Image 1 (tube, rainbow, N blue to C red):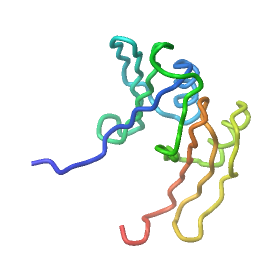
Image 2 (cartoon, rainbow, N blue to C red; image 1 turned 120 degrees about the horizontal axis):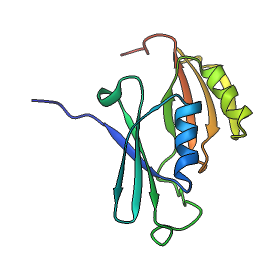
Image 3 (spheres, helix red, strand yellow; image 1 turned 90 degrees about the horizontal axis):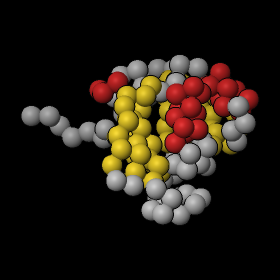
Length: 137
């Protein structure tokens, strides 16, 4: 019997191809497929673990199905993207014109380096570079 796990999140985007470029070319995720259902075009992304790790799904709704721009409300705070080099990834995002919220820095409490940028739709992206196991894990 398999235990429970969180496998995938789906976020709404305004420009599907721009979002795909951001998450693949800058964040380093890999496109694993596309799906079209009535009124929605979706792209499935994953990291190096492929189907065994967390996945992100991007959904572009027919313009009559969702308001423009995307209303984030308070439901989704941030998306975590684990990378090999947080500084290089953050620099690449900023150089491409994406808004920075925090330069990467080493956290005192956890063995990680983190930085923050916004994606094309304004979702807050936490770029994380692990430097060892977290305390208690």
